[in-house]
Amino acid sequence: MLTKLMKYEFKATARVMVPLCILSVALALVTQITLWELVGKAPGRSPSLLKLLLLIATAVAMGAVLAATVVLMIQRFRSNLLGDEGHLMFSLPVSSHQHIWTKLLVAVFWILATLFILFESTVILGYNGTLWTAFPQIQEFLVSHFSSSSDLNFSPGVFLAFLFTAIFVGAGELCLEIYAALALGHSFHKHKTLLSVVFFLVIQVLYHLTGGITPFLADLAFFLFPPTNIHILDLGVSIVSGLLWAAVLYVITHYTLKHRLNLE
View 1 (cartoon, one colour):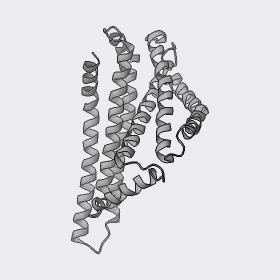
View 2: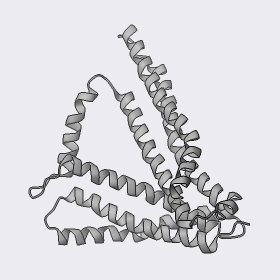
View 3: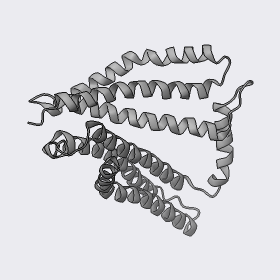
View 4: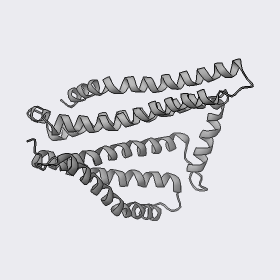
């Protein structure tokens, strides 16, 4: 049943996200091609105004993709589970866990896809004929920076795996922060939207107040694995602390949807 719910969710969200992603890449391509054409025809001139306008348009499109991802994530969770559609959704032979995982996995997918699209658009805008050849040097610098240690050397694959996992966990954590706030806000009879915003701010405050868990885990890791790679270990600690915080938010979201949700 989870796969069916995810299939429906992907179809509903793709109608918005796919055109925006295509628009972002297309604008980046048009901007770069137009500038090439202008500079090729008039090498001594700098089309500064047109370049500025094109770059602004592309930046707006890229920002719209990122904003649409967050707004759509909120809208889908709120309308499907907390609004009028909630009566139908919770009458299905589906558990609250499956509802949460459906929204969470699809939202994380689109966040990662958005980040990839923004990266690709930035690469297109920054292409100058030598950027591609610089990628090996950039990768070598990043790997040497994040895995420099006299006792332990990590391959690029290990570094990228840690980095991708940290981004994945961070995206899921962000989604659950929003879901928990929405669920808590909609457990009341009135001012649900306002209370959702208040709960989100409270969650942010608690997150920063409990941020001491990260250095504690770092100290524990350094004690258990001395000496080891500091940068890679930092990523690992961020992943573990993010998973712990996400687990707390997941429990709050699930409990509220199952026992405290007010659909009136």
